Length: 379
Image 1 (tube, one colour):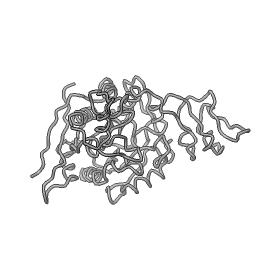
Image 2: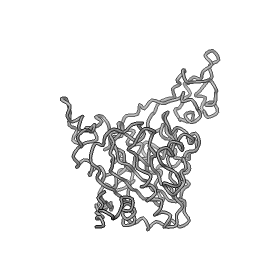
Image 3: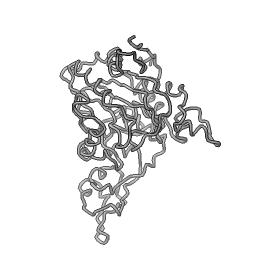
């Protein structure tokens, strides 16, 4: 498949010189973002606004840098993400938008609006075919992501207790899945009802097309029947977080499904990818806490290829020395520590990132061979 180009710059600056957001602008211009025709186009910038309590998510300043360049190129940018499958501060669009604003994201700080891609309750999705998909034939993607003319991913590199490594593919595949799409990636089982939280309001019934839910007249609660196919549509319908699915999919299967979801999002459309290796937390930005960084801040990467940028970021992270005081260093200091040969699996034994990149390559999402081009600091 040849070699994909990945552009890189570090975080160094000089006194009274170029700021880091300005360096990001120069990086993405040098990487060729202007080759995309954005004039008059709707441009989705997919990022993570951070769970409340988490402080490792990307600052709004970086989102504004990307949005400013898009506007200079004649595009109409908006920041976007989809609602979560789990209870938290981003499980519906109202709470999600309040969370984003509390974490500093608004039209002033980012220069563009925020649109929650899968709607009010996470049910506004569209089924997108996965060409060459082995595990997913039709991915359930937030409608606003697919309605956009151009797709840009802005990624915070971090660890993850299931996927091991969180970069571009995770931000796209898991992040752009609707609540039902996230459920499809995470779990193959049926719905589960928490009777303590269920109010018996029956709101979920209208979203079940398979008679998988039934109202129990005796308990005045909902229950799951043998007809449940695990579609996940009921998730967004419950306002009381009484419905959930266990994260019971094997980590390898999760990683492979995630790659196929990512392909559904970007296949055949103008795309660009940006990843920042900074504040690399041991867990996902979905956590309500983040912990100390596990490795130093390394720099910013940009590419037209989501797989190449992930491979470049993985390589950079694995070559870095763990920071003292971080969870990775603490794990490695344990008496019974088992060295898995890479930082991410050492951080979360049993997690899996290799399958995601393997599957991405197999289905033609991108190229693992890359040329790293350094954009030097403007001294």
